[in-house]
Length: 142
Image 1 (cartoon, helix red, strand yellow):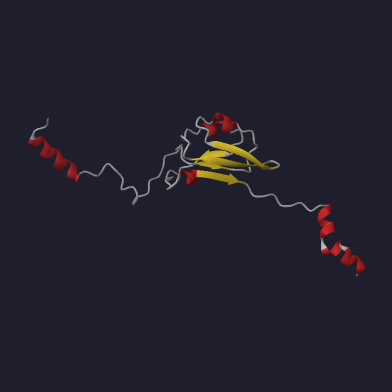
Image 2 (cartoon, helix red, strand yellow):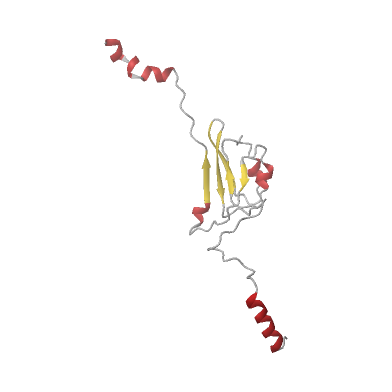
C-alpha cells in the first residue's frame, strides 16, 4: 500500500500530464493500416467460387447467384469475428476489410448487409423489335 505522501505526489503528477485516452465520440480516430473492420464486397469482381463461404469460421457470409455471372453477398456482421480469412482466400479480391468499426445497431437484423451488383441492361433482341409500335400491326396498316 502506498503512503499518503506518495499518493499525493502521484495525483499531482497525473493532473499535469496529457491524458492517455482519446475523447472518442468528439475526436475521430484513424485506424492503422491492415485494420480488419467491416467487410466490403465488390460484386463486379466476384466469380462465385464461394471460397470465402467455405473459409469463414463463423459462417457469416453467403454468396448467392442473382443472374448469369452476377452474385450478391449477404454478410452478417453480428456473426463475423473480423478475422479477414475470407479476404485472404478470395482469388479475385472481391472482399476487402475496411477501416469502418462503428457498427452498433438497435437490432441484430440491421447488422445483416446484402450487397449486389447493378442489374444488367436488357439486350435488344428480335422479340423486342416485334413488340415495338413501329413494327406492329398499326405500322403495317399505315
